[in-house]
Length: 126
Image (cartoon, rainbow, N blue to C red):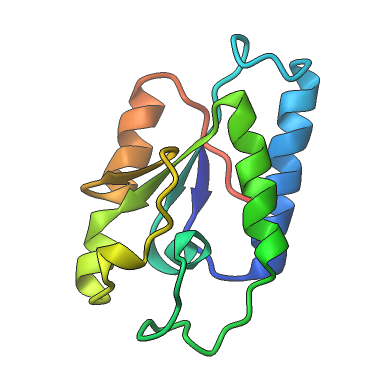
């Protein structure tokens, strides 16, 4: 599991590159490896369609970054988005992109712990 609680686009981009490298070590075989991103705090912004009315409304995110994430989903990557972050920051759930590989979870940090308990290794970039 890749833990994303940061808003730096360069760091997010590096995380995506590391995920791609990770898959390359397993010959891009989704039966050998399952990767997920757990996003909360500022990490949520990369999965929003519209940043207006959010703490990040003045940020500029290259759309290519999300397209790179979408490219990883052909190997089964999913992103788990923290509902607590949405509630605490008053984020409109409707601003989230509509892709099926984006899932809401009650708590990002609780999901990190749960996945580790199920055998997922913990990865954090930066």
